[in-house]
Image 1: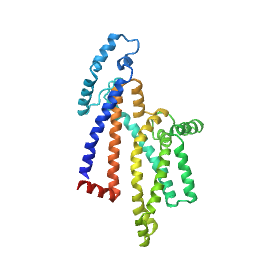
Image 2: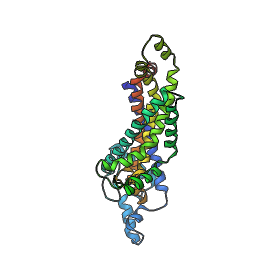
Image 3: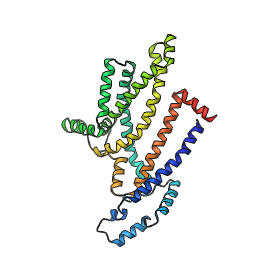
Image 4: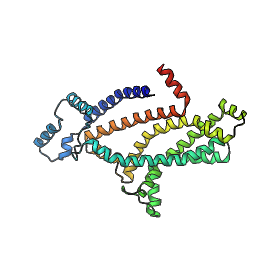
Length: 312
């Protein structure tokens, strides 16, 4: 298990290096001078050139990248052009708000999607299945940003029972988490239903029934373990999409977070902050995939057997 995790981490290093190189080149090829953006269009050329030398932007692009990679190896993602804070501190401060939103949206997705998928998957073809899947289709069809606007109008403007703007207490998280999590709850319900239907067709279920085991015991001790593998994998991949969705949600609801930080950094051509965000998101994707694989190995003996065979 430990060797498998180490191999995955080592294999991820070239991916991070590639992401750093691509983001570095693209950001430096985008038209616009960061020094000019920071000083304004009316700033004298001498001041702009002095700032470019101070930021190291006058060096050849390859030299800038080598210096950037050297700083990465020391855990230094650079310093923001806008506020002179380190990128690491910015990500740490704003990441807490995005983490709250992402975890809250995932909680909504599981709270709504798992019961619907469980009822529909254990009773396929019934009226409960048809109602649940109709709700799921509607949840997939409605864009989260459009649902966010509806929530603002209905709960914030018409009823005035929930705050709609800013980063405050738990009540400020309700509408953003619901608008972001509903779509993923529909996805979770449909995937869980399909996995359960497939699980009920497996030979071990027929064998367990022939042994006289009660249906509830078969469901909670065997079927759910079999069916949860694809769901866990998909949810792990969807966490990355939640991060991207959180960016738009933060803008709509006026929340602080990594999404707002990235948008403002792009508009201001704050290259170190944007590069740091790209690397951070890439690292999050890799860590999530690793954790998903480990969790699948814990709940699914077939995955552990594959690890054992690969190690042998």
